[in-house]
Length: 338
Image 1: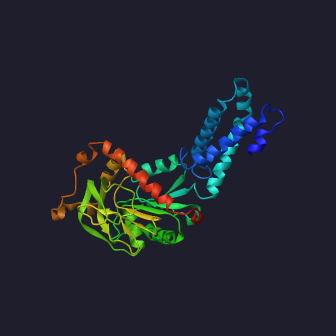
Image 2: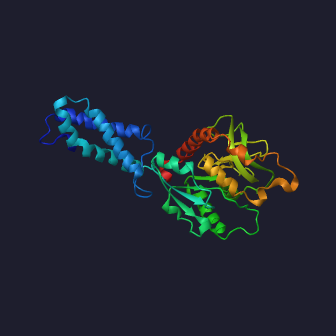
Image 3: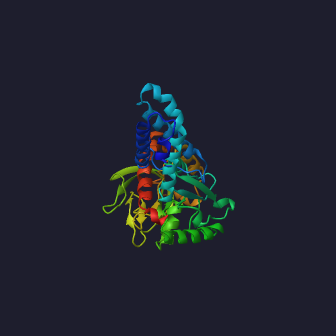
């Protein structure tokens, strides 16, 4: 590609323009692990990531062409603008081929409990995503249609006798996903489903945890997180540590706040790093009856709504922690597994 661009018959200075093409080509590869993050692809989930990539490619070329002698700038920029886009798109195709660009499916259990920052992070890193609204009767996706799953929270308990019929289909999908080598992340109910699928016990906890609580990392925690940090919680059920998994850490009310299994390919989190002030308000609106600890007089770890939403900066501080968890999660999967 670079050679084809640089040897046109009307090119007044082939060596210099070839050098620009080579520098841009190398810069695009370098950017795939740094400035550009994980580059996007329009096949599924829209073309916004690709538009960003195209704009970045043009910007990169124009910065390079600014170093040419003035008489050559306009003709060279015109001659190579489209070419540099093709170079960067070729790089994108190679990233997709090697599994560095992914398509993630969200499994959603409630209309008001969505991906929130998870979706923003995936798009920002160039990945694509779809959502399966299980609660609305949508059939679970085929595992072949995605590179990974994120299983969201929901206002139900696995101990309930009247669990919805779609939950059985979801469990079958997750059982296949756990064996597939593809990355799977669960949050809240999603983490409980993963723990259950790995043979751990899921049960009603002594206390509900609603609001901001501190988590202390376990000594053998594999997570790239601070030794102690604050996170938003919204759960009553708890789970045991699956065989072969490593613990994330604990809070005052829950001995296990998350786990990593199979080298970090499968992650379960009880807490909500993805939450924003608006999504937290929606969570509180959907608090199930079994979260209500008034029946046994235990409200020690249940905070009031106004207190939870009082400081928006708490939600902002979680964003950097979410970034660390997601980067570690996707990096745990060799490209050949995708």
